[in-house]
Image 1 (cartoon, one colour):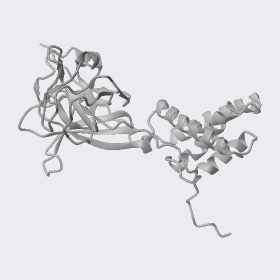
Image 2 (spheres, helix red, strand yellow):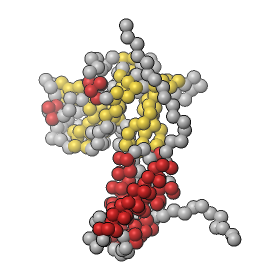
Image 3 (cartoon, helix red, strand yellow):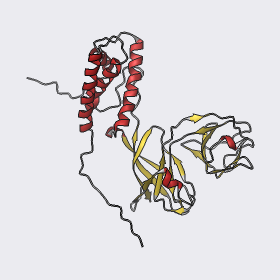
Length: 309
């Protein structure tokens, strides 16, 4: 017998939703049915991120470190950073990657002098929400494109250091002066934005960007690049219904089973016994997919040695 000769089977959003409804003993009939299923699918993919590493969402990023600057934002769609190094001579023949140790917030907090300069050897990953919070704080003195000190109406309403948005520009400041209502040691044009002028009375918003905090801060004369592998968020379910989902083909059974279970607990007419069967099927399909979607290289353990006098 002749086979199809193809291996391209996939399901767009409409077909995935239809499959899920049929497993619930229902049919996709209205626009709201598609809307509520798309919402459930987005929640489902967030649940997958909470269960562990999804290998197809791992990609590499890099941040150029600046002399004297400790904190740097990373992409908001990042679930977590997995592996990190500091790189010198980026892209050159004699490029060198050196391990940088991830530390906790309490450990970073106990570092006596966070402005010490040198080769960064430790990093605290501050996993903020990425949300922007409006304030009543405004610019008190016009800001030029090169200003590193910014005077505002009231620093008491802002964190003691962090990221703010003024117009379309994101700015990192290292400290505040409560006496002069100033943001000090500002690093301009952060997070891919452009330094710009900002007139008096422009509102200042707090930007809770996820960020790394390196120690020591980079010294002058050497360019370091913070190179990392991260787990990003799975892309949102396609709004038009015709888009393929951001999953490899081996996760299609799990997505169909998971969506069916999610819908079964929202549709009143679904028998509770059927919902339990759908849940069991979803857990089985997730286990099968997760077992396949794993790192298959041999494990490697490197002891970190400490010496005491």
